[in-house]
Image 1 (cartoon, rainbow, N blue to C red):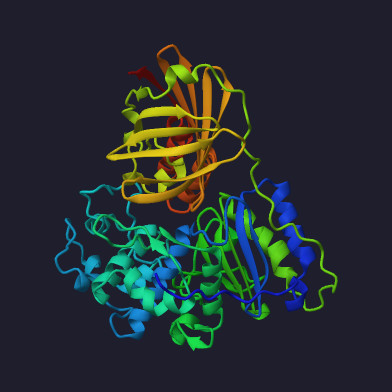
Image 2: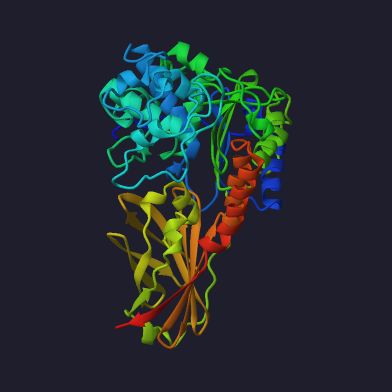
Length: 529
């Protein structure tokens, strides 16, 4: 993009705009005490940045994966399209996709409208493990998915609703959402390099995959808070900016923060704090407090979103205080959340394994479970299982203060530098069309075990590999963050709100209990010349 950057104004101190430094400090302290992986946050009052924090290796200039905050951007595209007369809330999906029909005829397909997708009342329940590979037709898969109710009857938070909304909008407006939103939203707000993951035919995923910087998210939420106005101009249509954040349907989430109603791509906050928010998995938040004329945004990698919400209600919400003390409390806004890499003694084995290929045996069970031995953190394979293939043909090369890790994965070959001197090295990789910025470091645990870590710095998660050598035999063990057990616990909790049959629910939970052991087993291979 060539948009002009439009930085938000900064206050000299939080108290200058009626924000308590002490409350912000208390928030950070509890984050630290609980060991939560917060990447960044911003607090705004009266349109001014009162406090901001970027914890290394995350920086203000880097984009961050927004997960389900993406839905709020898809909904905004809908608002523009309605305002321009290109589509209506009552537009039927069958009209937009006349070449599609359910394999099993059902009158409900003819009733399904844009409004049902936007309010999560479509009545469709596509299975998570539905085919999403290169030959899969995501639209047909959605249409053929089972119905749980009549369209417009019952709210269920189904990710695929917003994928189909994205596909429907592309049909209605005649171009991808990114191209459509650039002159209408991203340009006026000064977004520099927004990106959106697409399926194999170029349709934005809609429900997930959007990325931007923390400050860009803050400007987006601020624009909605101000009725669609940013920098003195009406950017988002005023009627849509008002309507989208209101309650359109009751919601039946498992947590208090998801029981207060769903708008059009936005959630309502609990009544005790008021307002609304854009919400993404693993605690990506864009929260508006209209009565306080305030905004809080954050990016993190915390599976317990309920806890992260509660910390915002506990510390950030009461921070908006026009009588806050004149002498601000000291704030530590630059502390990293990880310790620097350890420096270890070098191993004489380096000369023996230098440049030799490590060939891993194929694990035929993992693809069936939609997991792979991949360079990506497990959470990224959960989000997009069709993107990954088994890692293989690993080689290591060693220099004076860094090593080089190369491998093949599907049709891609990548190489990353690994710092051995107590600092990370930055590199970039490409896996099945997706690009990732990565920090790498390595260390010898002992003469025959080399461990290295890949930290992904524009999304969440890391992947750590340990290679243990015994003559020509090699054992590879992988370990991801967020921990697989935490991810499965989160998904299992979500299953309770969808699956009402107690027998089926127990079967699903039993399968979830097996996944951590299956997703990170030991993988065996050998050194070849």
